[in-house]
Every structure is written in C-alpha cells, then in structure tokens.
Image (cartoon, rainbow, N blue to C red; front, side, top):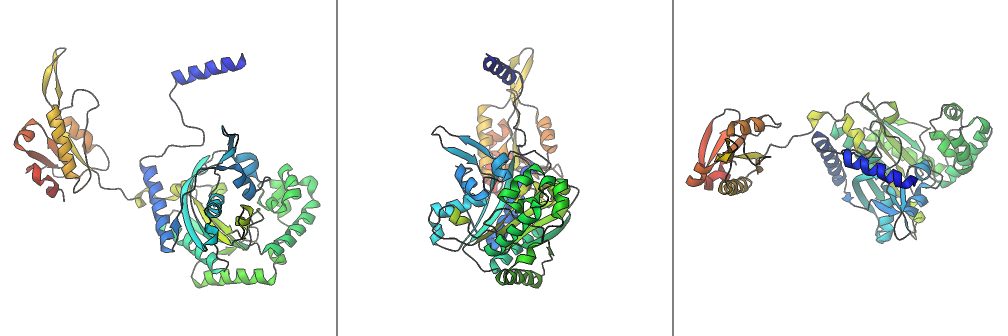
Length: 453
C-alpha cells in the first residue's frame, strides 16, 4: 500500500513539474561546451606531440575491474560507486576513473603482449559523492597512460607533458608541481610496517575511518581530512627514511631531469597513494585560485602504477605510469577570452508573402517555393562557409525587419546575411547584406558560393 501511494506521488510529480537533471550531473552547452572542447583539444594536441594515441573504453565495466584495482577498503569502492546488478545478475559499475578500464582493455585485447603502449582518453566518470564547486557526480576527465616502460624517463615525459598542457591552456592562478616517491615494493612494505606501529599508539584518537584503515592500509591515514588525523599524521615517519638505493636512484633521475628541463617542482613527502600497486613517482599540480577554493586545488594528478596489469589477469607485471585532469576544474580556471569563437554561420532569411485572410488580419508566410529556394541557397553558401535557413516558430513569418533585428541581437554577429523572397526566386538572385555597413547587393544565385569566399 505504501509503495502504491509512493508511485502515485511520483506520477503526479512528473505530470505537473518539468523534469530536472540528476543532482551532481549538469547539462553543458554554449560557452561551457566550447570551453570543454577547447580543453580536450589542447590536451589531445599535447598527447599527440608526445606520441600518444587515443583509446575509448566503455562507461560500464564489470564491478570486479574496479574492486580489484581500487581495493574493497577504499572510499571509492565502499561509498562512491554507481553500482547495480543487470538483468543477467552481473554486477556492473559506471567507471569512477579511467586507468583501470584502460588497463583492462590492454589485457582483454592482448595488447599487454605488444609493449610499450602510449594511450590517452577523455570522457565522463561517475562518483556518488557530495557535489561541490569543480566536483560533480558525473565529471569529465582527460588522462594518459604509458604502459610497458620501466625507465624513469617515462615519468619525466609524462610530468613534462602535463605541465606543458596546463601552461598551453593558460589557466588563471599560480600552478605548483608537487612531487614525491613511494619507492619500490620492498621500500613501501617497510614504510607501511613502520606506519602501522606509529599509528597503533594513537588508535583511540584516530577517526573511525582511519581506525579501519590502520588494519587494512595505513598509508590512507596520511590522506585523511579529519582534523585529529592530520595532527597525528604530522609526526608520522617520513617515506624517504625507508627508500632503498634503487628507489633513491629512480627519484634522483626524475628530479634531476625535471630541473634540467626547467620545470619547477616542490618535493612533498606527505604526497602518497594508498593503493598497493603504486610505486616510485607520484605527483600533482595544484592551482592557487579563489575560483577553486582550497579543497579543490588539485587540477592534475598522476603516478607510477607498476603491477596493475597483474591484478587484472595479465601474465606479466607491466610497468605503467599516467595522469588525469578534471575538465570541470580547468574550465573554472579558463578565462572566457581564451576560448575561440567560431565564425557565426550565415543566416538565410525569407521575405514572407502576403497571405490569406485569417480572423480579420492577413497571415504573412513564405511559400513552399521560397522555402525550397532558401534551402538551395544555404546549400550553395555552405560550399564556402557555414549557413542555415532561419525558420519561423509559428505558421506566420515575421516581417523582414524583425527577422534582421533578431539575428543581429545574437552573439557572435554574422558578417553577412542572405535574403530571399518571391522576387529573388523569380529572377534567380540573392540579396547579400553586410551587417556592419548595412549595405546590400544582389548576387546571381549561381555566384552565391563564390561571393562568400
């Protein structure tokens, strides 16, 4: 009975109110869409210049793909996944990040046997978290993955590409590159053991999440935003105390190479990744800007993830490294003037004929013949530039003056407009009006494409 009433309430809601978007998921058009395209295009150009190729993976994956790679104890898997069971009783997940899907695609398509692979992707990700400025439940990311290259030169190349991409984009605010090393697996194991001993002394003062992480993955406590955890973590052992010689050499190469390339960075020993397959270099780029706020300052983050492929069933433990950047945050930092506006298409206006009597007035509308002529004129103009026919919302057409006023009120302003009516149709001509000078001339229809070159 309760569910029936709920269904009735839902039915009334949808019958009386306009539909709305899902919380944390936004529509994108106009300037917002042009910014999105500009950011993705700039990132693609940067990726192509470094020899990366595009890859597209499904939005939906089997849930096991992310549970294996992100870990069942992570906040993403535990609290934030959009996860459901399909009609075949398979657990499916809408991807919360891009790396796992790309790694799965390499294994599925046996590309893990054809190394190295340098790939980039762009598309929507999904996390059920509290929406904030620059953080949505459906959010767009651009990312790269370089798989099969163990040398630290790959780390440098990926960091360099991300830095150049952001510099080329020209975001507002001061960018800072923060860098750290997690060492190799043996260094990480020693550090993890030391952290467990340290945090165990403060178990009763840790937050509930951190007490749970103490038993599963103590590195995640270093990422905690809880005030008590932050105070305790401030005096935790530093990672660099546990780095072996090989790990130190790897990080020294990365640091020296970045300095040699003139890329400024700060070593942040508290910058970590909680997932076990991450090792060696990790980094993030933060932007000091009021447009983002402190909590959303990270605009690009990356790391080396040797061993991820093994978790997904590959016969090999392949080295890999990559980064991802949130497009919504970059859009907040991107000045409007940096986004180029394409030239306005040429509108083809129709002069309405005097129509039949209707309720004491005469309706003015373009005849079918004039409509067909306007379509042909627009087709011819499109041989040189963009063009479209201006249609009327109602059966009757507005006078030419009102049509012109509506066109001229739009931004961007078209350089010229084309005008046709029954006279132009009869004589095979088109009137071309310059919107800046208001001068107009008559052009033979067969020359109309040439006149717009």
